[in-house]
Length: 453
Image 1: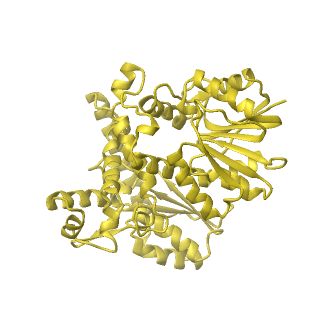
Image 2: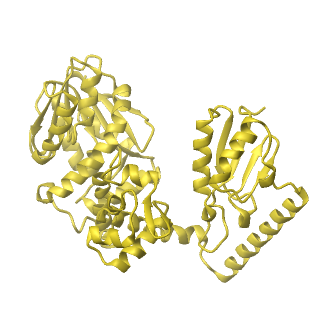
Image 3: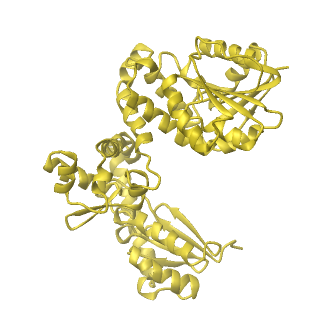
């Protein structure tokens, strides 16, 4: 039995340019419209939507199949969706003008497309041409670079509610021909829309990538612009075994610190309530947040326990940013800051909880041992150390994001990396922590928790 009255499969398969596919024919907009219309009609508990790979009618996409009756729709546009939702999903009557009614012809078309696909695969294999997915992965940097440059140039703010390429070029003081070419490319990636000679933001770019957006994330995204430069040194870093462009945090421009902390705050603000829930605040009166950055975790712990006082230990420039977030949260009386250097300064004593979130990956195993020893000295008897970070599987090849982040540390630090559970547990045990356990969390990072007995 189906748990939903209708189960909709809609193709959104991406194929190389020039190859017919639903994605190239606007499937993403159709899917987005379908989801919005289903929600607006109050049918979320009635209709299940699943984006899927090819269903065999590539030249006539976007294609959609509705079960349990097996109704096949083709050549869909966003304008068709309200009618399908109203007539088919609410009234139970398929929209005849969009249905593939000739089952025999439908099967013949699918079989013909499958035969063409298999013939193309055979031809590619015999010619020695690399697989499409490999080629697309290698070329993916092009799309990333376009988006990063759009953020760096502040294209989406310049476009605003609508603008010609000449107007954008004038606002940003760029070359007109280059601006037109660039805006067309951004449009091809789905972050702008073009009607005639007017470019407009999409809901996503307006919300997240414009100064006028509800959740303007440009400053956080600028951290990725910096990563691009460092990742471009990857080949030399692999040869040398360390970063070839590293500078101490105290030597970096204020813009770097602002972008970095903004990026970290965006992630921390989302994860902090979950970490607080998993760690708990019972019997926690004093919290030391080492390298606490924007203060998102200290704020979340203080909000969860009105008797808890937190102290953020970080560099002076970072603490200026943290101070703004603390004041905004109205917690200046319970969340304080202390400037210092984790590698050189003492942490103090008597804390019920010491938090090390997204810190250990910056350091070598030897540096982490020294850091954890100082953390142990700061923890009160019966208190806990909580480490949040990427934790690799035993062979260090997965999860993928953790394995790739190890390279981020290769290009960005003298000796940092990502580590597995055995390494973290070994370090914590060697400096005196007991009852060591791992707590898995949704997302890329997990917790390692130890108690001072």
